Length: 551
Image 1 (cartoon, helix red, strand yellow):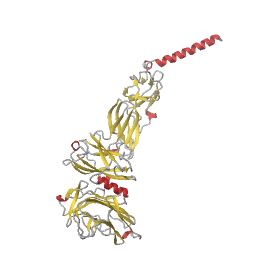
Image 2: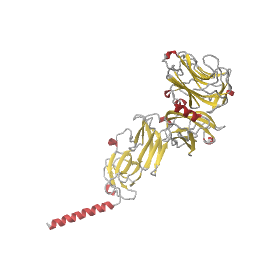
Image 3: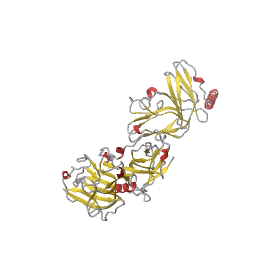
Image 4: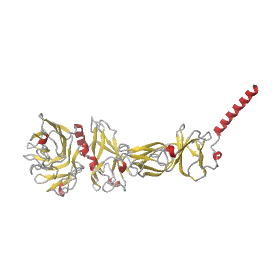
C-alpha cells in the first residue's frame, strides 16, 4: 500500500511539473511541421511575447463575403493550445486571412495574404495580439439613400445600412492590413469599394469616407436659449438659412461657385442643402440646409460645414430641402437676375415669368438678392398655376410668407403677392396697414396690423390659415387673428387665377413699389414657434446660428 501511495505521489508531481513547464514554453510551431496533408499552422503570442493559450483562431478565405456567405461553410475555427499553437488540416488550396483573438485580454490580430497550394504544409509567422481599433465608415452621398451592407471581405465584419443609418461603426477591429471595405445592396450586385489598402497600426478610431477629403471644416452651433433665439418646442424638417461672409468663412479655399460646399450631421450624415447664392468676388453666400430637428432651449446642437475639395462636384438639391411632401408648395428666393425666370425651389417648378423687369431690378435684399418693383408696370407672373398645388380651400390649412421693403405708400390697396381675391394674398390696404386676406364664401376675410406701414425698412410678413382661424405675424410676432364662425363649402374657392408677385393676380392693378424677397406658399398652418424662428434665422443679424472654424 505504501508503494502504491509513493507511485501516485510521484505521478502527481510529474504532472504538475509538466503543466508548469508547458505554461512557460515560448511559442513553437515545429511540432506541427511536415505531413502529407495541406495544412496551415502557427502560434499566437500575447503583447508581452508570451504564448497566448485559449485564443480563438479563424481561417477565412480572402474571397469570403461576410454579408452574404455562411461562415460555417467557408471558414475554419481553432483554439490555441497551452503553447499558443494552432493547426488547420486538410485546407483547400487558395489565399486566406487569419484572425486571432483573445477574449480574456480583449486583443486581436489580422494576418492577411496567406497563400497555400496542394499538399503544402505552411507555417505562418507568429501572430502577436494587440489592442483593437474602431472603424467609422460614412457612406458617400450616392449611397446614403440605398439600403445594403458594408463589409470587409476576408473577415466576419459586416453591418446593415439604410437611409436612416448611413454611418457604420465597426468596433473591435484587429490591427493589420485590410485589402478593401465594400458596399453592396445584395448578393447579386458587385461590391462598391469604399476604401482599400488600409493599414491599421494603432488602437484608435479611424474614419473612412465622410468628409476626410475636405480640407476645411466649421461647426454651426444652433442656440435656442434666451441668449440666442429662444424656442420652447421642437421644430421638425426645418430649412435653416446659412449666410457666409468674410467674417465666418474662407472663400479662398472653396471652389469658385461653391460647388464643394457640403453640410453634415455630427455623425457625418450628409444633409440636403441648396446653394441659393454664391459670389466669390464679393465674398457673400447663402445656403439652405434641411435639419430634421431643431431642439428647444438648447445651445449644444450643431451641424457641420465642409469646403476645400477641388474635385467635389455641385451637390445642391433645392427640391430636397423644400420638399413638397413636407408642405412646401412654392418657394421663390428671387435671386435670379431681374429679367430672368425666377426659379421655384420645389419639385413643382412653378417658375416665374418677369413682366417689364430688367437687370437693374435685381438688388441686394435680406437674404442675398431680391427683386425691386417700380409700382406701376413690373411684376412676376407664374403661368399655369391656376388649379395647381398653390390653390387652397377656404377653410384649409396653409401659410404664406415674404420679406418686403416698401418704398412708397399709396391711397389704394397695394398687393405684394396674390392668388386672386377668391384665394389669398398679402397686401398693404388703403389705410396703409399690412394685411393678410383670404376668401370666405365669395367675400374677403382680412387680418390686419394695428399700426400703419413704415417705408424703407425690411418686414417679414407671415399669414397663416388654420381651418376657420387665420393669423398675421409681423417679424415673427403675432399681431392679429380673425375667426370665421360659419362652416363653408370648399368648392367656392376661386382657383382660376395664376399666382402673381408685385400686383393683384385678378387684374392689372394694385402695383407694389419696393423690394420683395423669399416668397413661400406652404400647405400647412405653421406654428408660432416656426414663424418666429424663420424670422430670427433669416434676418440680417442673427443669434440663431454661430459658425466656429474647426480646420
